[in-house]
Length: 308
Image 1: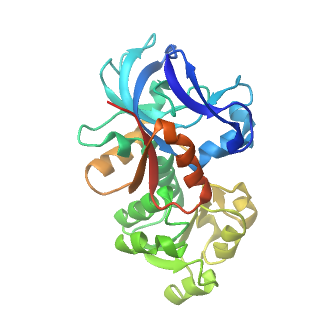
Image 2: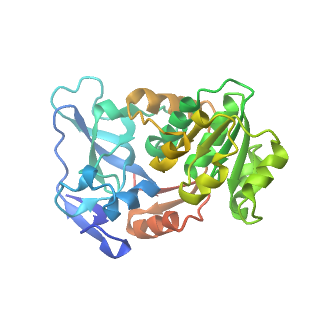
Image 3: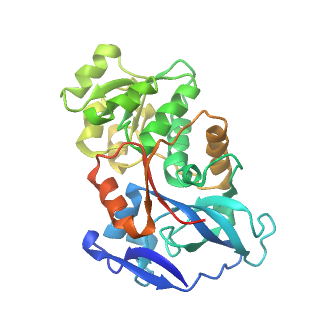
């Protein structure tokens, strides 16, 4: 049996629950993993709300929260030859398995070996936050020297996106609340404050002719307020709001495969990317971790950790 945290119905925090479940049995193409760390992502609460019920509406309750997992392989399912018991791995815990649990199963196609020098906590920040950053930067298709605006730079995905953009030779302008200024500027990002108002005007003071690309990590009115800054709307990409298509932009095309996981892990191991883990919570404080991310005020990445 393993302890898990999740929700007993679609809704808000009132649906949260702890429960015990038998260790999942790995099916063909899966591995059973003992968790060492789980990333906390805004997507976790979106799934809990039922807003993406096509992904989890067919599953019986309770659901385990979380999609970002890092840990050690305990068992392999039929047909698995590329991972072995004892391997340190990280990957996507899709709906039905979850990562806020002591054990879970991961599909090998969406799982990678963890580089030895990479902490489990860092590896747990890669599946959602890290690979989203990779996909939006690749999706822009811009050359070195371009100026890119990251709308919502201070969160976990925003900080990795900014660093990845800089590693590609882009100049980065980032928007965020004042509490996220220090960490953004420490990375060399030109920071634009939501609090000061007239975000578009502030950006124009740094880029009078507009920007070459916009990565939107906020959506809604915030996305619309900066969309007009991009010189070519085809280089407007959102990871959160499909309405970007109405503005001539594109919604990020997500790649959830091993290659993307390995690419981001290698950049972290080399020191190019830092996920900025700002706090680790034990499993019995998972509700606090979720509430912190839901507040929208956290800087960097939060993780849940498990004893070795």
